[in-house]
Image (tube, rainbow, N blue to C red; front, top):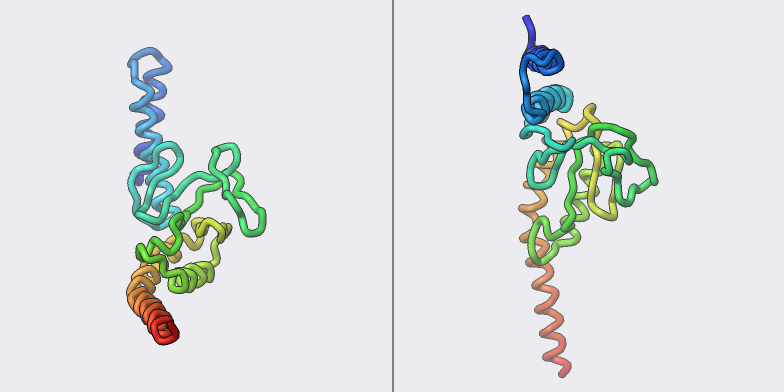
Length: 182
């Protein structure tokens, strides 16, 4: 019994044969859509993460993560790789916080965000771009990283309030000291 991917591959082959034989004029978009289904289903199995259909060699998984085809020939490279390494034509799961600590709160809780990001880095990304707060995972540990990052995000977001209260206390102490001196 054929699985879904095999059925789509068979359909694509039939569409291509009908088109090549001149029996059926099929728009390129229709064949591309079947190819996108095949790629999406294959990557869902490989990464063990559910996401929308792949278009243009990448797709957003959620607010902070994507799955994409990385490498110079695809125009998708790591901006500032920690060890200067670059992917070569490989599908990766990327977790990225381009706004850094603003991802947690508009008051930019740096300490909480740094603790969060450093814990994320312990999940063994294949590539890291610490300067841009981006981590890239191969399919071997992408599912674990995806699950764990969501748990960690929830945990650290909850601790933002404490950091913000501590910041406020420090500001108020500084104001009191200024008032007492001045």
